[in-house]
Length: 85
Ligand code: SF4
Image 1 (cartoon, helix red, strand yellow):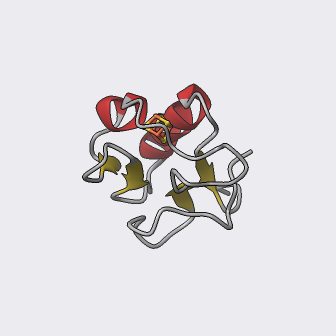
Image 2: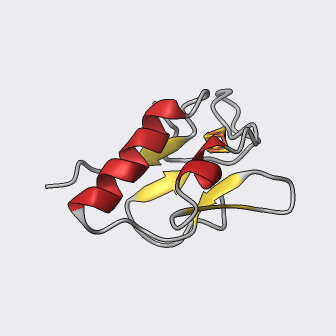
């Protein structure tokens, strides 16, 4: 589970987030590029290749795409604050 207390500072405001690469729990982004390659409308990379949420998903289709990235992230760096209703 991603650490909601260690969010990347560039995440756009909203439920979805990526964690900072310096996460002490070892679940910080490792810049593997999976999420911002798979869903470039919602995830972007900073100057170090680490991911942050660029745009929050709103439609079921968008949420499903972001959920796929969450499940594919090798270090559980993607999270969301509460389940979508
Ligand atoms: S999939 Fe995870 S580790 Fe890879 S760039 Fe995205 S947040 Fe970082």
